[in-house]
Image 1 (cartoon, rainbow over the protein chains, first blue to last red):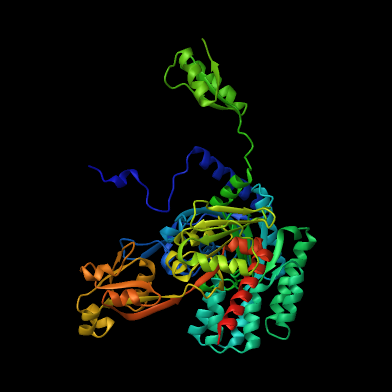
Image 2 (image 1 turned 180 degrees about the horizontal axis):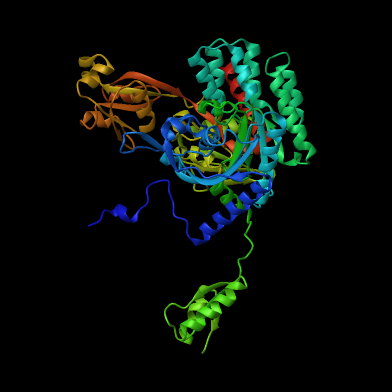
Amino acid sequence: MPGVRRLQLPAGVQDLLPAEAAAKRRLEEMLLRLFSSWGYREVVTPTFEFIEALDVGPAASSEELLYKFIDREGHILALRPDLTTPIARLTATKLRHSSFPLRLCYAANVFRYEAPQAGRMREFHQAGVELIGADGSRADAEVIALAVEALQEAGLVDFRIGIGQVAITKAVLAELELQPEAEMAVKEALVGKDLVRLTGLLAQYSVPPAASRRVEGLFGLHGGEEVLERATGLLAGTPAARYLRELEEVFIALKALGLQRYLFIDLGILRAFDYYTGIVFEGYVPGLGFPVCGGGRYDELLEQFGFPCPATGFALGIERLLMARDKAGVAFPPSVPGYLVAGPSPASLLREARRLRQQGAVVELDAQGWSREEAEKQARERGLNLIWVDD
Amino acid sequence: MDQYLTFALPKGKLSGKTLELLHTIGLPLDGVETEGRQLVFTFPEEELRYIICRPTDIPTYVEYGAADLGIVGKDTIEEAGADVFELVDLKFGYCRFVVAALREKWEQAGSLEELLAMGHRRVATKFPRVAANFFRNQGLQVEIIKLHGNIELAPQVGLADLIVDIVSTGRTLRENDLVEVAPIFPATARLIANRVSYRLKHRQLAEMAAKMRAAVEKQETGTVR
């Protein structure tokens, strides 16, 4: 007897039925079309690679998240946990002589060995862009503006993008001059937004009160433009001040585009902290417990592939966007009318079907030789218009 | 945008202190009780909704954004491994995670390493994740057996050699001839928030957290003799 597993799927993967697959396809097409209109060109990278090429990216901050296996030559391979890392490798090798800045985009599936009880999918889909070879606030503002348009394109109205700047947090942390383990613990507490642990750690490592206030103060810096002013006060005279100016430039550029109502600043947004180097951002939709998109500046990744080069980008979670659309009641426009073409003569059916298809219709052929009565019943069940061809 | 704040409150041993705290910071509580059949309480004027949950489910409700906020023990948060923001240590509901063994075996062995070396490697617990993390971090290999309650029974009937459990006074351990052989970490109740709610409803959440923090501090200084 075949095991029960023959009919089951492992945890974290799913089938998409026709309606779901159609929604996913249409959303991806819309996004890729948008990216392409901004000059981003699509690339496709392999589903698996050598582990050495993948364990440097944002999703691999914990190596346990990688799906690993061994090929017959004994090399360790891994399934891609994101597209940013493969695209960095591709750029550093095959595209290093192209004109920069380079704009690349993708829509693909990714794999992460998430804890099963969290209910997260282990295979899911992302669409995103990478803007490689451009530093400075213009590039940061471009990808954030594109993220706003992508969420609009996805049919969402009620969303916000929170912008942070991890370089500020890094500078404030460096100033504490902690031992490596202590710094690691403080970082963990900051990234996990574990204020309770953070306060405990700052006391445990005897961080002076003024510096402690700065670290804890970063958490509370949330809001519109006024946050920049409050942050200026908090960071005045520290090395972090110059990174705050970058954030200000980005915000002003986006405001000039009229995007202010979608944006807020939150210096508590850190994402994959070790990997990002500057402006970071996340997109949120009310009622959905997870961000729908995220990204930021990662100026040190390409160096890992021997090609030092600044870069920024973002990825949208396709499943999460579809969920957000569902919640907001956004429907795709109705599909083209469908026909069932039936009748006694197969040759006539094919001719009629071709004629209708040339007009853009979706046509199903009767493959069974139904009677007129049966064909009418079948058409009703499928929601199709019956075309009965007599001769 | 839905401005209602959904607050997950625990049934059971943390519920008394939780309601007390909500009362202290001036939240509406008319008719709210945690052990009855009604599980949702809505206060339209304050745009506030309470949902009553089993403590072990609260990190899940909050992680998925079904609740914006929740009050739950650190023990439960750790075991759930949920990705939530931990905003305030509410200081009540104190307990500790410990490793415990039968007194007799412990006295023979003298150390955890020795005990495991003697082939005693089965650990019974309600908290498999916490237990697995602890032993892994110590570089010790054990076999975890997940049970749902009365863990102290397992060593007595030979199902396990060690247990990982939470203790508050240590009385249950003593009554069952068990001794604590290693502390894991202490736990108290925490205010947790969904990571998206924390950004989108920041003002309301930050205000609530500040009030709770102030109430907790006030209580602490008030009880110091």
